[in-house]
Length: 159
Image 1 (cartoon, rainbow, N blue to C red):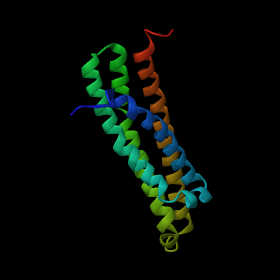
Image 2: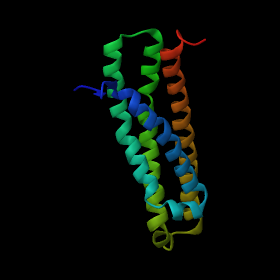
Image 3: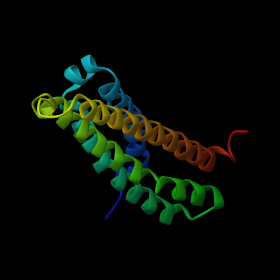
């Protein structure tokens, strides 16, 4: 498969979408878990955004591997590649938590009536902890991957 668009490497175009959407989705996942008003307003948007990120991430990695084959491997590119492959588990977690949050906020009130208050509180707390962990982890990975990619591209040009 040719990973170019109008002569530009597809990886360069896709990584900008991932760099923007992962932190936005992570923020929505955290807000969804921690602020009930946000959960009601965000609704299905949060899991849909997480699905988009989940689909874009492996495509971006594949496009990056195609670009890597075209330009060759340096230690800096290898580091960027290795970090890039570590993002997928985080976005899978982001998607799973986003879906769980939506299910809980959408169906939880009905389910919750049949549960003890402690159980409802425990579920909310578990979702909040999971949301904060996957949100923070995915944003940290984006920063590390982006830094490594920028260093791979610009280290010989700037600084």
